[in-house]
Image 1 (cartoon, rainbow, N blue to C red):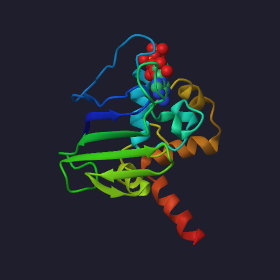
Image 2 (cartoon, protein in one colour):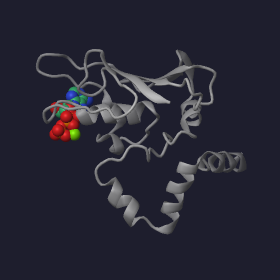
Image 3 (tube, rainbow, N blue to C red):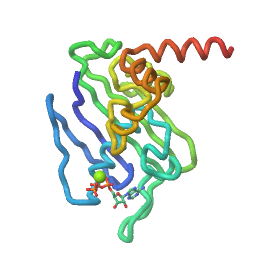
Image 4 (spheres, helix red, strand yellow):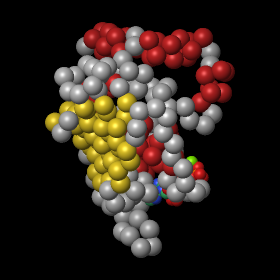
Length: 180
Ligand code: ATP
Ligand code: MG
């Protein structure tokens, strides 16, 4: 399994549709300060279901929508699609290529889709949960994250391990079932 491409439309500084293509192995994003490298990483986290505006370096979720510049007006929606090569079948879905998409409207609504069919956030979280790309996003090591892991207490450390091992999904399902 590897990431094939990421398409951003109206996400942060990417006002017009921008497609990044990735190859298997290590890929690097390079560019001057402020050119949008971290925004690309934010887009990856966002399309995989990140719910914390702070983790996306914003005050609230609408901050991910292109806010406009002196030359270009603000946009009403942000849209990100991530295409994953699933020819080895790591994702539990019967497609060799899987595209997950997320759209947020400035008016507040949001949409998620898997291969063009609309779905719930939960469906995306479950699809990714055994891959290490799960909802706690330990797959993205941001600034300060290493310190956080090293300084974590026993319980948080256990959470990291459970997520990596794919146990967290079942724990959350159990908690949800018990709440009903
Ligand atoms: P550095 O090398 O300094 O880490 P970078 O390439 O990681 O830089 P980013 O942090 O990805 O840069 O991009 C910052 C730019 O994105 C800023 O110019 C900021 O104004 C712009 N930006 C962030 N959110 C939005 C938004 N909602 N609308 C328009 N522009 C935005
Ligand atoms: Mg940066």
